Image (cartoon, rainbow, N blue to C red):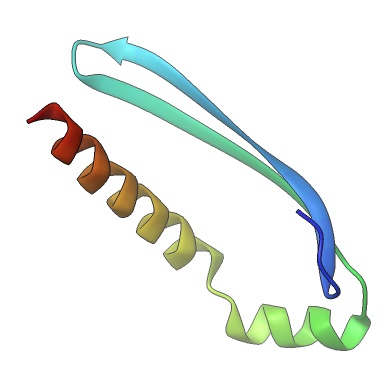
Length: 67
C-alpha cells in the first residue's frame, strides 16, 4: 500500500485448522509520512474495528459463494 499519507505492506496467512474452520493471521507494517498524520490516525482510526469489518465482509462473501 502506498499513498500520500502512508506506505507499507501487509500479509495475510490463512490456515485450515479443522473442517470448516480457518485461522487467519494478518501482519501489517505501516509507515506514516507525517507526524501530524500519525497523531490524527491514532485518534481517528480504529484498526480493530477495521479488521472486524474486513472479517465480517469476508465471511458474508464466503457464505454467498457456498450456496
